[in-house]
Image (cartoon, rainbow, N blue to C red; front, side, top):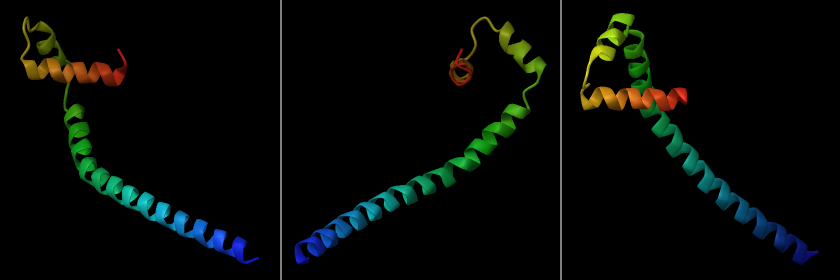
Length: 81
């Protein structure tokens, strides 16, 4: 019985180490997410302010600024177009 008990204790130790490592990753992800959520909210609020006239103005630009191109490229990626 001792060899089985020893093996179980070793496996328990291994699992606890892996759990601790996974918990650290989870905690870091939650921290990163908590930092990103306010930025996401700000971006969503900004999108809500865009109206049809804004889109018409941008469409009429022969050479839009690089930032406008970048934003619309990102929107196309998000919309999978």
